[in-house]
Image (cartoon, rainbow, N blue to C red; front, side, top):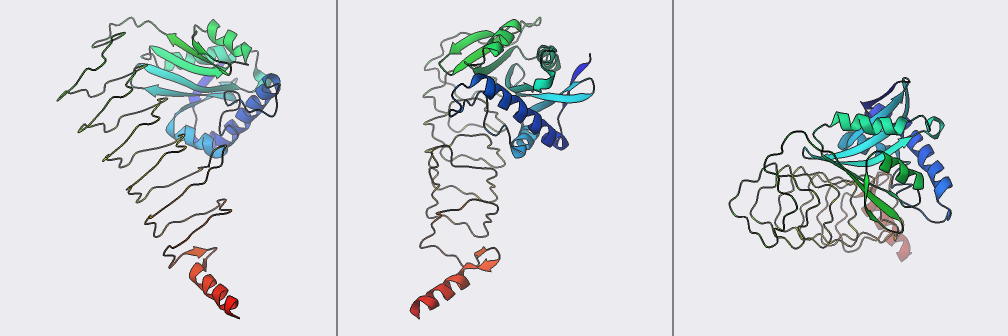
Length: 307
């Protein structure tokens, strides 16, 4: 029995999506007694989407799981800095489960990132076999709710860590003219903090709660935004030159997006659901729908109304 992991590539997307869908659908049949309810820890958003798989291969750390030369699953992780890792998803084809593939893959991913001292993850409260599995692999419960369990695994480093500040109350501390390049924060509360006139270039935010935050006068050139929940957010005086929205949706509540007083010349919308879209009091010169000039269509429409 040979179990290995290899970095996934775009050409793997179709096969990995098929295995992920098969795995998570089987988990849903097993654990979701109320089939009308979706448990996003069992069937995570985009789990059946090839485009989502491509995104995760390109933007996250995605390994395919190989069992005796056959791809049988995948593991997706987020590595923050040098010391912190998160298991976003792990899945093994149901036909190959029970062969200790999952436990070996956890060992392999830890070997792949030996500097990571802390691993965390969440799983559904309903998947009791997952609880047994992760606890067997050395994970400890950090929280549990009716729907979700959180786990953490801390690995003792044989090497002393320089400049480590841990378990300190730094509330109301002020930092001015400080060099804090490559600072790593994990399980840190910065609620109500203010950051101004600072260089945060190449900063990585992952699995953070930024609700009710404010971003004013910020340079976001060449930034990447993916897998975000922006419900009820407001964007004002925003320059969107060259911005692309890909595989976006309106969420469960289907609350419509509004564009007001926006300059969007040359914008393209394709392969999208625009039912009940309204455009009023706007300059539509040069705008086309299926290569038909909209101003010509309206000209014909109004001419017909006058007849």
